[in-house]
Amino acid sequence: MGSPGDETNEPAPSDPDRPAAGETAPVSARIPQHVAGGVFCTSVAIFNGPAEFVLDFILRLGAPHMVVARVVLAPLVVGQFIAALRDNLSMYAGRFGPPPSLPVPPPGAVPAGVVQPGTPDDFYHELKFRDELLSGVYANAVMIGHTPSEFWFDFITNFYPRSAVSCRVFMTAQQVPGLLDTLTTSFEAFQRRISGEPPLEPPPEE
Image (cartoon, rainbow, N blue to C red; front, top):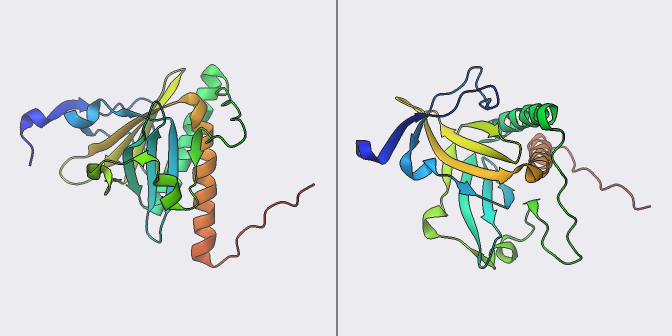
């Protein structure tokens, strides 16, 4: 149990730009002080198992590259997160136009934005991963906001007696369409797998 000095009374913002995944009304959540500053990321790695999705937020500025946050979501929450993110991107485009595209990396370079790792050992070999992040933080709701240049995500635990933000992440607006696309692809593949449907065949090369 933390002391009162360990948290702030600031509620999670509840303006229309921040719909809560899985909620019909805005969520008011306590923000602990150690979470309030958030973390900035330049890419996201997405894994899923039989019962959860893992989002690793990575900072690829300077060396070594490092995982700055790990968030664990149930599949139901991922579906709600996708819907809320799609709505928020639509609101962003209505105000500011579509987010600018990320530059195309040169051959052999690690792409920016969002990735779905193939072999975890290979992917994480060059990444710094602090021990306290290994288990990640759980969230069962997400609130989203944006400015003209960035998006932020408040991952929330809705538990009695008070909802609380378990992780706050910032990323540039350029990265968000990639996050939506990759998360959607991963979620659809998960749904096909649990329903016993065969995986989609890649389109034929022309």
